[in-house]
Image (cartoon, rainbow, N blue to C red; front, side, top):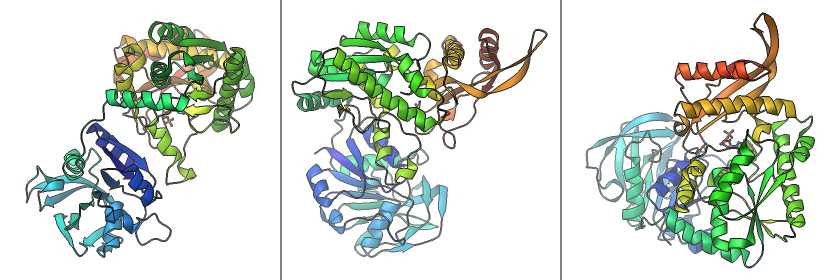
Length: 512
Ligand code: XMP
């Protein structure tokens, strides 16, 4: 099949490999290195990439490769730890302990196949991040690139399409890394660049129809990009078998319910039921200040609301559509184990075990920007497709600490002014996500001649490509000043505004 398999040995860059390959319009998936060779044979990839990883080939209990994988006759590219595994398996020398992190230079020695388009003797900049390195090529291998501190920067087997690079071609700091990955995908593996939004939609329609048959489906609509695109796709596949449910959780932004209803009715054409469940959610959240407990209770309440709504509507729905995306899927199956799960995104983690619906997740192979392409291809308007992401638990994780109707109102007002000013400054599309957060502290201020002792609002705006890493957005000072002044003057109960200048990592985008 025209697809590549990426085996994830735990590198922080594994997702980037998938992104780069998808940008070449080749379909690929990330799987753990524990998949069997029989499974791989059946999945029939045109090539396999072994990612980097934090382990050393000399450690016990580390993920390895089945020797049979190298005998499949399918091209293999090992990156960093992946290369070291190949080297060790084939009798090369892997030297432990000389670390190399950051920018480095290598000299290309052979400019065929993997380095097609480069020339022999050329020096290129690469990004290195390794503790061990391959010091000597295994018997039957040829060196393709070298560096003073890194004698075997790249190699290949003489009798099989097995390649290794010690550096990371997938990161932006390896400026010509995309050419190397493209050479692997097209020249070595013979892939075709056929992965497009249109081809994805074609396949997805068939898959949804096969899964659903003539049964009924409900879709929880959040008003965000993911659930809207998922709903539009499933609606195109099965028409009236789909009922969309928009739950007013009482945790929505100002005027969100009206906006979603209007946009939905105008552009999606599917049946829509709007449920007012604010009391149920707020009751469940009363007195809860732990972020994960908030998520768990919200996930559970969503399902109970879907259940009762479907029952009341006389709808015997067997399926629930979720807008789960690929980063959530990868996080939940990480080889790094449960300790690497930072937040339980309710799309994947917060659902109750006794859920009465089978899930349909038509976007689970896509990254956010790909979802936006699919949305446009399905004819959804830019105002919907270009919206900032909004988390399922809504304002509950932006009112830090106890969630009460009064505190939600304060946050909603501050947040609305903030977004209004961002729109007015023409900056909305430059920002990945922007929102206000209500802090659980009070601060002293002076208004008129009176002392005040009121709430603090933090503003957050970040740039990002996929939400996995993010940087704070540098607002012009006059815009920031105007936002703060308006919030303090217009929102009763707030006397101080702060701007969050943390990047992710080490912070996360949301505060909870
Ligand atoms: P973090 O805070 O993990 O957020 O850096 C990354 C992206 O995920 C969104 N997010 C969530 N989405 N349920 C969701 O559906 C959640 O519980 C949740 N927590 C965070 C966040 O808004 C950002 O876009």
